[in-house]
Image 1 (spheres, rainbow, N blue to C red):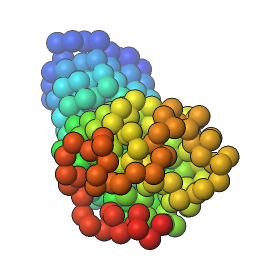
Image 2: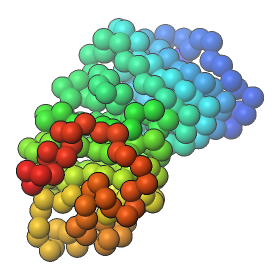
Image 3: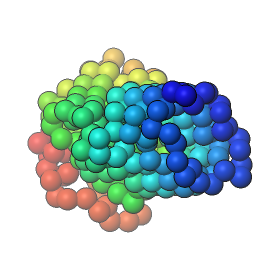
Length: 247
């Protein structure tokens, strides 16, 4: 047996624990654990592929672990969609992935793959070598309040990358960002006017508003500290504001 078929445990609402998956399993099919009640998952050492939506709506999943020596190379799309309790992704000496600042990246840190929706981290700053934010990377990260993107870093923000980050209030979009895909900010109900966009091109801004499901007010100038929408002191380092000043 080398594969767990798609939907093999889907909707088994009494499944709370996976004690042992044989190390012969090379691939786990799409939606394999969809809507189960598992609280943790450790990828088998021999597993190379996790298909799309493997853990969809696993609302009690808290920890996901890629152990040392694991052969995992490929992660499908939306594997943690609906995993509203996921707090931590662990990656121990993987040849293909790394965890940094709570987020899962490819090994050379050029692409952020995903960030746990229930992480307590409220400020996230990208390293300068990161080039892409994958689709659904921050989907539903309810504690995330502010994002810092350095100059000469991110070039592309994927589909629904920040969708339903309901606490997100501030993010900067430097000139290096060339592509923002559909619904990138849909459901960001607290992102009223805290988006700092360095590209002043009318066409870029119009495309940003139309494709990313944003209100036009997010691009209006306002005082970050005294903004009428600001109901608390933002817990971010001073360097966050230095970027805005330099723009």
